[in-house]
Image 1 (cartoon, each protein chain N blue to C red):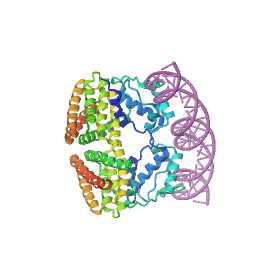
Image 2: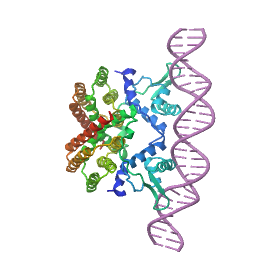
Image 3: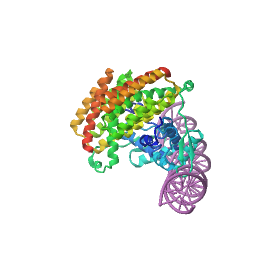
Image 4: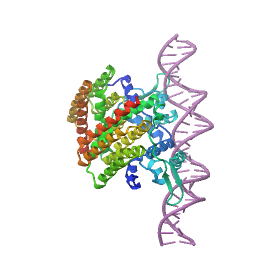
Length: 246
Length: 246
DNA sequence: CGAAATTGGTATGAACTCCGACCATTGACA
DNA sequence: TGTCAATGGTCGGAGTTCATACCAATTTCG
């Protein structure tokens, strides 16, 4: 039985997506800026050499350099020449402020809510997978270090970055490229949201307890519990944000 | 506490991904070919006009036309001019054959296994979300139609396409762009695998029973059961494929 | 029948991107 | 101290992609 074209129509509407959302240049700026803002490269660290970054991003060095120039002009990085030189991150982690929350397009809001739903699927899955992995010493150490950073963070801005890094670390432990990409994308959007919507101290404490429980579950290799804890964590954050986004 | 650059290194290795994997032209060919092979546009249906497709894929018409030319040359479509003309799908669904399975690169195998892991996260999540949706009559009808197509399909090739469409339909019902994209991507890879690795009739029967249970769970709004059934479904397929892929 | 609408086909120049080679600066190290 | 290596900076030509306008074929419908 061949479906009529009309049956297919809804599907295709949904399935066909932009083959290429933007120019290479913009894509680079976007990704690098996100990487920096998420704290993957914290303040003071040096980015990899241009040639390596270009290779990694699958982009010509010229294009990458244009992106770098944009970052430099935006004040995220500074560049020094010569051996031992390079591009260092100068961006101070932004402190959440509610100013931006007002000018929210409907599309933006929709995307944010979608990110929350997708997150609830992907991050628990990542946690479960990570718990199922047989982690080496380095893996366990990475996880504990990332968690320690979150606990140690005093200022909200630092806490936010450490939190991102923690979630990305969990994803990294799965060793699955697709999972990592999904979590990265979700965290980027989440980061945007949390910058626009300041979160209360009490919520941070709650969140930290969940992180701790998550670390225990993953280190213990308890997949089911890891997934459950992460699901709760996502649900709690989501409930909070949904309330504030509308 | 600022992490040392070395701490960050593993994370960045994982997080930085190609900003743009290929040229716009290739991306279009890739996506259109996949869409057609998955049966989103079954044999005999007419694709949307070039101008609309170009807009949808966010690509200039010239570029889209080059992609179309490639598809035409590859024998997937035929084109007629004039009002009421257009580009129609001529590709017969391919019958699975094991010929291709031999020349498998390590990277390819790795990607396939990764897709299976990612699928086990995303598709159950999609099923659960879909079950939680308050479906309208159209939604319910779509799901039942897609399922009926799977059951009615006689030849393996047709069954394969109907199966893809079924899973994509479930994803579509969630209404979440990110979920849809994730499932599409996963199904594309799965399709590749299943073309290279013929599956036995007995497995098809088993799979069909799971589909039926899934439809019941979603229509009943039973999220937990929908998720569980889909998880089993993915696990069973994965076990089979993992055995054959190595 | 004939005009209009819809669809694919063609052309051109500008902008973007890529690649490769080479230059300039600076710190590391023999 | 001088050489080397690593790094950012610059340049030019080739290939892609884009936007726009216009042409050609064919069906629909007044």
